[in-house]
Length: 241
Image 1 (spheres, helix red, strand yellow):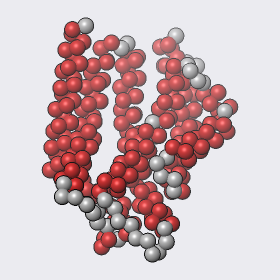
Image 2 (cartoon, rainbow, N blue to C red; image 1 turned 120 degrees about the horizontal axis):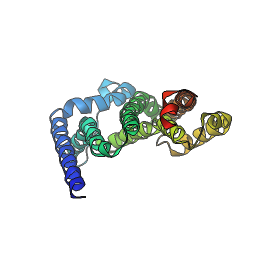
Image 3 (cartoon, helix red, strand yellow; image 1 turned 90 degrees about the horizontal axis):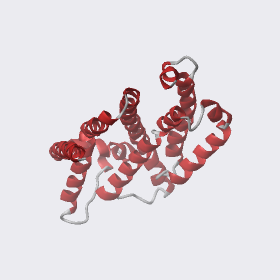
Image 4 (spheres, helix red, strand yellow; image 1 turned 60 degrees about the vertical axis):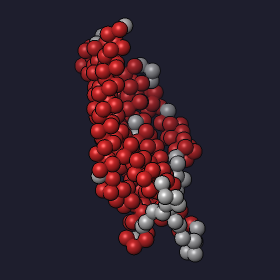
């Protein structure tokens, strides 16, 4: 028990150091990060009208610290996930270690893909909301409300893109079968559409489409992957037997 606690402390210390270093890097390159995050706003309103406005003397420094902290988590995420993996791997069997590592790497890739899709669709969402107010209404954004909305949308897309990975894991665990998923396709598609419409942070048609269509495709891909992994004679089935 003491050895496990020592190992956990070691992994946590390494992770905290990695996040701290990433935050320092984020603080230094903050102008470039902010330019990247403001690109959707500049695409929507033009280069001459894409500023963010603060209402207090401390707000500018506070938003730099916030962006640095988020950047630290982003930059250090591979190291943090690796430390998590190194902590749990010794207690797993060889097959579980192989699947676990694939799960961690796939999670990172799918979350990043979802966040990038949100970033690309964000200018269209902004244009939709601004145009809905009419030509005589002009939006003025503070760093807090603009960046919070963008980050929330990117996180929501990132989490939603983990959906096929969850389905594949459930298939491997025997909780569901590819055949059952295929037979319930129509109900699953309807459920996906309803859940996206209810829980997406932005209800504009562009974000709804950009999230719904990939999830429907991912559902079909999860069925295909499950059939390949669980087909008779596959390596997965032989090892489980």
